Image 1 (tube, rainbow, N blue to C red):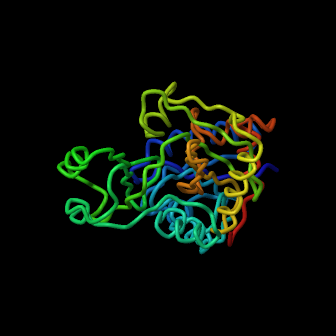
Image 2: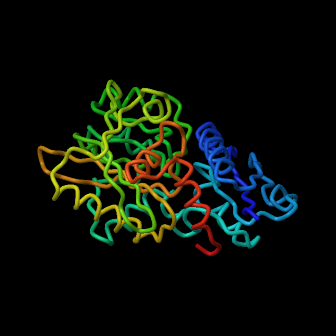
Length: 304
């Protein structure tokens, strides 16, 4: 008898639209592979939604993105309920979603990071933090939600004049010019590096990620072998530092003028939409979308 997989997706975070897209694609893939699939558009009573499924699912495929689904909350619930699940566990998920905590772990493992500080909006307005150019990021959002690149003091003032909806605290990070690279890590082993070209977009923002044609993915990235090895090694170290499981994806900037690599973050619930990066890495390794989704299901467990 085929495994019964409950796919949880949607949810109520700022990344709900992305999660709906990821979940829809994964549901199709799992049915293509012959799994019994129950769809759950997660709400705040997810425990009741899961308990109502009869028979109990063998595995939960977690296709949620953003807060509550990607930050350890759902993972803890599934461990309490004793249901095996995909992707990383409570610890890795919670640390990865908290950008400042993740940066601290990366530095402990000597993984190069951009300079960064945790500041209030008032401190930025007073000029008491990093000078432009820099990047502002909410500490606990993904999919580039709320990210602002500040190149001049005038842009800084304009940004602060707008309503910031992601809390009083902001992660301010040195802006590193150059090239955008990403590496999926599968079961601790780095896959091929992808370079992301964003055209007219200043960086790999929400539109670049999820609108067809918003970015171009070059795989393998056209870089020297020693640089490839360095970035892949950093990705694997980041995966181990946080204790990730299943598939995660580490994002980097590379400044060729200074020959400088810096990790930006690691994503424990990488997107699985039609424009996402992990499916591209899988295809490069000879795995179809359905193959990589099935691998995640077979890799699932409790207490990850």
